[in-house]
Length: 190
Image 1 (cartoon, rainbow, N blue to C red):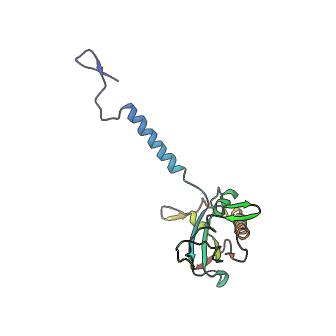
Image 2: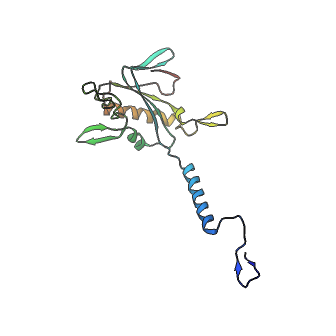
Image 3: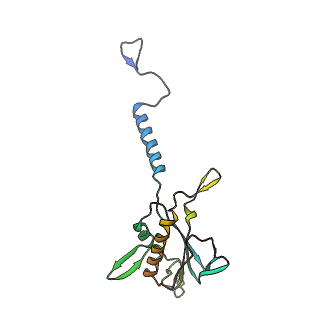
């Protein structure tokens, strides 16, 4: 809306509002921020920790243990697929030889012969891998109460997790890859 001034031409009103161009740009940026917030990355989560030894105890009984190696806590999202499991493992079939990147090929250990740090992976050192299912990696606080509704339901997650453990065992050494008890109240020591 324009106001008539004392001269013969019209002028825009003087308000503390943004010009139409700036208003459109501001709204576009605001919608992009909302879109980014609502479209969070939803994929399998893995927390990887180097350990000198680690074990899983259920009901006072040790069910799995490794010496030096990697403790991997795995959280499975309700929308995860086999391709997400493959991403965590990154199995590439090259002439029937499995090569793994991401977890198994992460260079987290020092090379004892050269003294170079962060130079060797778990397979080069023949270390163990302990996999533990951890739905709490997808926990969010709703007020003061934890909410785990985005974690995959147990009936779907159990076979999914079992296939992931199997992939790790095929990609490395079946005897070196251990896991906990799915759905049990586990005590993990490192």
